[in-house]
Amino acid sequence: MHETGVVVVGGGVTGVGVARDLARRGVDVTLLERGELAAGASGSMHGLLHSGARYAVEDAQSARSCITENRVLREIAADCIEDTGGLFVSLPSDPDDYLDRLDAACADVGIETERLTGAEAREREPGLAPATEAALAVPDGAIDPMALVAATAADAEAHGAVIHQQTPVADLVVEDTSVVGVEVGEKTIRADHVVNAAGAWADRVAALAGVDIEMRASRGAMSVTTGRHADTVVNRCRPKSSGDIVVPSDGHSILGTTDVTVENPDSFATEEWETELLFEELTPVLPALADAELSHTYWGVRPLYEPQATGDSVGFSRDYSVLDHAERDGVAGLTSAVGGKLTTHRAMAESVSDAVCDRLGVDAESDTADAPLPDAAAAMKKYDLDSLVTRTRA
Image (cartoon, rainbow, N blue to C red; front, top):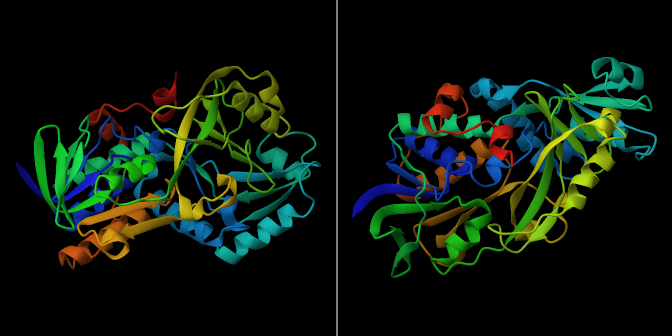
């Protein structure tokens, strides 16, 4: 039998973020990942460092969180980020007033913008369509999630956390109405607290303690071209929808994304129409995509918390929730982190750690917003992780 202060279940960006935050506060942490780090949604997204502009019109809270954490990550994780900038590009077919609404909404939540004419936008990004009428420049960026996860995990370990890959949790140990550990194979790990950061599988982990979490899994397709067709993050200037973004990634472009509910995040069908839709929707803004060579398409599964996910995922908040199951369900010793985005993972991890430390009587404050992450390239080698595009290649 092994004992630890906190077990974190899940080695995506949120899980390693929680492990890092707790370890830097002096908490004894063991993280368990059933596969490799970033094997779930964290390693299967389009690599956008959100400015928050995509959410500003309909979801101000998420937009504020994104721009705040965008600035933090640029400071602490600079070698994981390419400062591409972003453009919301308005075409004749896009809603006439959306650029004005977007600009005003960004101002309301503190996202800096720059209005560009069509000619100015094409001077900045020559691949844009001649029909470009106007654009709004925003501080989007490109981020390699694999590098971010690796560097975050390495910092957690440097501060005493123990991280195990290829270590699935078979069960939670429940005594009376408290979670007191986990079962891993034939071994029991006793813990003062368990954090459920299992992403799209969070409902399954919670169910091991008899707790119900209303999750919905939504698959999204990303298509990768063999060449790089824009040096800026290019967004369609319209309400959030499928096929609305192109993200540069090394010598490639990543086209995203779709939204289809799936029953099982471990096994789901994929459809050719999703790849076709991405090119159909994005070629009007970047005409070179009409002749672009497709390298591969990959799919990620969004872990959506159902109280925020009652319709298509393009229409609801992507903010995160921290569930204290002692208060919520009468089951002590368990906290679940659900929802959220890679850009806001650090703030989410801080919130989770605050809640756990309150339960454990730890009064140390978080310093993760100011402490730089270690070298990402070295961390990638340490955990044997590939870059985003290499990781997702079929």
